[in-house]
Length: 179
Image (cartoon, rainbow, N blue to C red; front, side, top):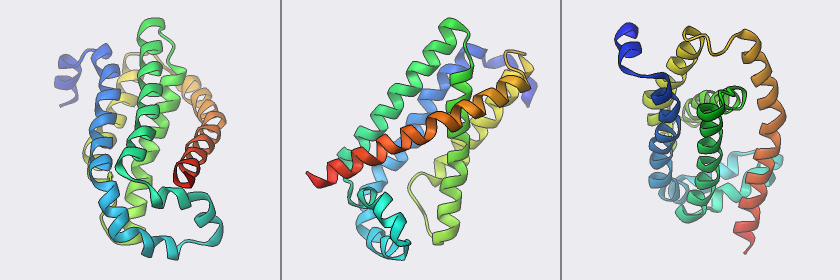
C-alpha cells in the first residue's frame, strides 16, 4: 500500500494536499458548528469550569460567518507555510503546522469521548487528518527531507508560536461576540 502511494503521490503533491485537506476538514466544522452550538452549546458551556468559560465563552456564541473568518486566517497561514516549504525547501514551519494539524485529531476525538457525542470535525479528523498526517510524517522522513532534529526543532517552534496564535484567535472571538 505504501509503495503504491509513494509511487503515485509526488512529494510536492503531498505538500499541497495539506491546505486542501485542511479545508475538507474545516468544511465539516463550518457546516455543522452553528447548529451544533445552538443545540448543545449551552449545556456544554455550563459544564465547563469558570476559567474555561471565560477563555472559551466567545466560541459558544459564534455563528457560521464568524467561524469561517477564523478558518480563513488559519487557511492563509497554512497556504503561506506550504508555499514557503515548496519554493524554499524550508520545512520547519510546515512541520510545526503539521504537528498542530495532527494533534488537532486528538482534540476532536477527546471532545467527542468526553462529551459522549458527535463534535464538529471529528469525522474528517479520523478519516482525513489522521491518515494524511501519519503519511506526511512518513514521507518526509522516507524522502529524507527532514530528520529527527528537524522534528524536535519544529516541535519547539510550534510550542512557541501556538500560544500566541490561540491567544489571537480567542481574542478575536471575544471581540466578535462583544460587537
